[in-house]
Image (cartoon, rainbow over all chains, first blue to last red; front, side, top):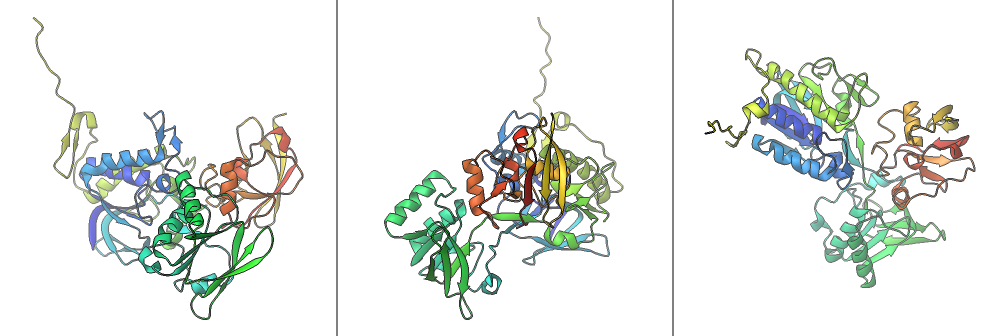
Length: 352
Length: 109
């Protein structure tokens, strides 16, 4: 059981900044995220896009913003459960919450802050009849352990970076790699595209364009896929051990919607007049995942919401403690790692 | 003139005829969101960067549109439910040329 003061669901910019504000109040945080690394949409969707409306930053790349936030919160030593999706929420008799992930990891905290953005990113599954029957029997939408494809015949579908990069990687260990894409053009980093062309010429990757997989064959486990050239209409059957469609990820609110939260338009209703608390006392929702009159899904609004949430969380965790907000210019930043940052002392000296 | 008329069929097949301003720097995806024609959170997920295909639409009138950019083309190539007349709503800037445009929102995927 992982215990903390504030359990944050979602490690995007809002969730990360909440760690800083909580840290100033000496509250510890732990974050859960379905993705394998922190940063949320900023990392998953648009790491190289510039953002122009972060106060104080005329221009900052989304990926750099996340890097800066991680650096800013490092002194507060947040814990992370990454690559796992928060599945259930229970309240204990002594008024704590227990959040369990899809992998069974349990977390206990007095306060839960949902900073889940648009939801957890789930792989987009192509609409092929029977595909679900072959899931984990040859069909996978994510590559968790590339070693399992050693010596196997693999078909990858998709035209983005992950389809290209995995084709390149698996070409070294799989016995056959077939790459299927609906168009002749691939969308990926230039060097990845060039590498695939090189491997194609060397006979290590077979490329099928413009083609689509439209049938899966097999008695119990996957035995072959059938693809169709969308220009000529000709079908080709490829015997294979694995079929990996990589069509990106799309966010789904998912299990959160069964937690008894007040949900409106795919977002969680909160009290925006005070502390961004949900209808479940002790559970807050901040950032893109919440809604209230006039809501704007902006990173800068998420930062504000995180800050107010932490003040309210402090009162809930320490109902008897007196507390006033302190400027960082006055109090500095004292990390849980023993580090201390503060403004240099002014020199007072007579001029003569 | 500062408004044009758009005919939008939603994912459930219901038709909406709406007014869209041409002077607000809006795109088709934003018009659909502003009239709440589709459920919030199911369209325009990436915010309009041509990085998801949640605003895919089928163009059903014979307006001559700006051809898709490389980015749009690439995203469409990974989209599901693709048709010849598929476009990303977020990449269609609202201008006078779009007056009387007829579109259907593609299924969610």
